[in-house]
Amino acid sequence: MSRSYYIAGNWKMHKTRAEAAELAKALVSQLKDGKHRYLVAPSFTLIETVASIVKGSNIRLGAQNMASEEQGAHTGEVSVLQLKDLGVQTVILGHSERRHNYKEDDALINKKVKLALKHGLEVILCVGELLEEREAGKAEQVCETQVVKGLEGVPAAELAHIVIAYEPVWAIGTGKTATPEDADVIHAFVRKLIGKLYGADAAERITIQYGGSVKPDNAAQLMAKENIDGALVGGAALKTDTFVPIALFA
Ligand code: 13P
Image (cartoon, rainbow, N blue to C red; front, side, top):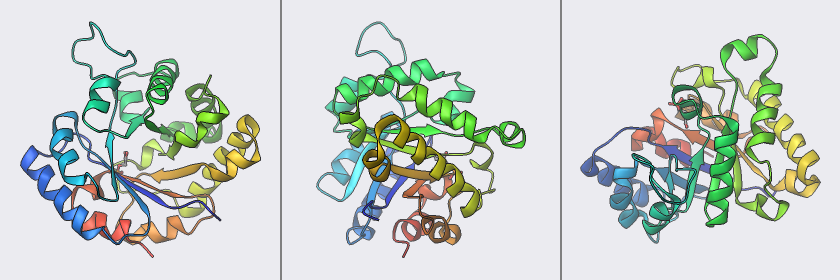
């Protein structure tokens, strides 16, 4: 398998500038010989601070969201141009907290995906089912809709800049991880779907991260699965004690 592992930390709405700087510095030093791809995604207010620390390291700089418009009268939003100005390379879009708590729908997420790609950002597109959807046997269907609608109008040439993160909503922040087997079923399903939409080569190449209570003691088992190419880590990304062992998993 030629895909490389991609371990990302989503810091969500945590940390002050001083705390973020401390974590970023420690990660730069402790991950410098790491063999995988890395990313941190701090809150907007922390990006400039973290940017100056990760610059030139093997840690990419991400944002957790972005406006669907390039600029204009959008009080409280942050634009792609503003993110690029700070050195952001990647943006997480369609996170379940955005979908469910802030009512972002597939059409809005799709607009953001296309805008981010237009400006040369890498996109981590998050998909995942609610517990009641899983219990109703609809996990695959929900993920299919979110992938198809999220990528609507995205040409094959842009697919190299797309990462998909499968984050079952019931596993986020709950301490309940999908079993490696259950996660791999959805990852394989999503990969096959990418194959239908973009061809076999694209399916083979696309990175699909797993997210949802990834911890040092379950990372290696998850990553061992054929279709799991990395992790999008929330709670455990907030401390070097927990993020570094995930990032350096063997
Ligand atoms: P937890 O690792 O805290 O479950 O969060 C996962 C997540 O939502 C990453 O985007």
